Length: 322
Image 1 (cartoon, rainbow, N blue to C red):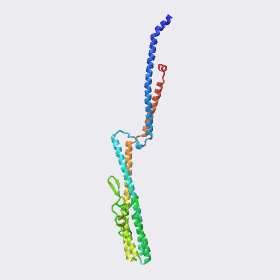
Image 2 (cartoon, one colour):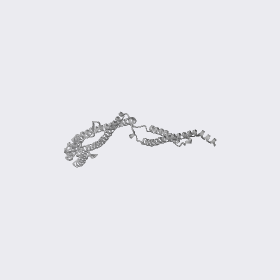
Image 3 (tube, one colour):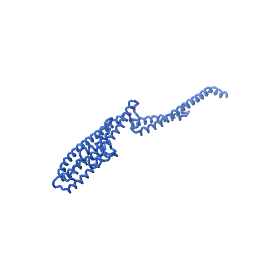
Image 4 (cartoon, helix red, strand yellow):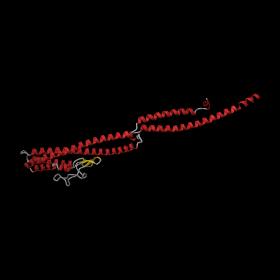
């Protein structure tokens, strides 16, 4: 009994120290567990943000990717490039519209050329002694139809307006099959802006194509000569037809030159568009493959840290004391 009391008295200080140590270790472990859980909670939030960012970067189209640099000059340059690209889109639209009008004009001039050539064939055939009043009347009827067809070409509607109307594109430029063929001769030309402050003529007006060339006048002259059964007048009209034919080819050549200019302009605008888009891309677009790889690497490191911390959380007091 005395021995037991002696042992208790002897061990009492040590037992107290042991429980004190256990209390300290338990408190420390609890503190570290709370700290670890806080880190895990923050890392869980980081994980969600990483996953969202990864998905966003993977799906991000180049045109909407963030600027790779915080350089304000880059932002200004990108804004300027966007503005220039919008202007180029409008210029290209204008050029395409001008090209379409020129193509329509060339088609019209080609048809007009064939009409003049057919009229000359009729004049040559009826300008000899073999021509009779009846055959000349038949020829006159065909020439009159050619005049009506030429008038119809002059009043051609293109994209909702008169192709050869000039500045008065909402009014039919030609009226009547006899001189002067119009109540108000069209004036002015449609122009397209192909660059800042640079305008080009898209096509001719009816005055230039049908009146100044002498086309309608020459056809009318032949019709009158055939109707009058006048050999001399028929031969004289052939000269007028030759002159109208030549003048029409001059206009056709001008139209072809304008078409070529439009094609060159379109090529230049396309090249400029490509250059600006490349310039903008170099400033703006992020390397998606590199960004995703970096995010995956960081996420892997984060997951390893999470695993390590989860093991710490699950430590018991016995594990801690080993």
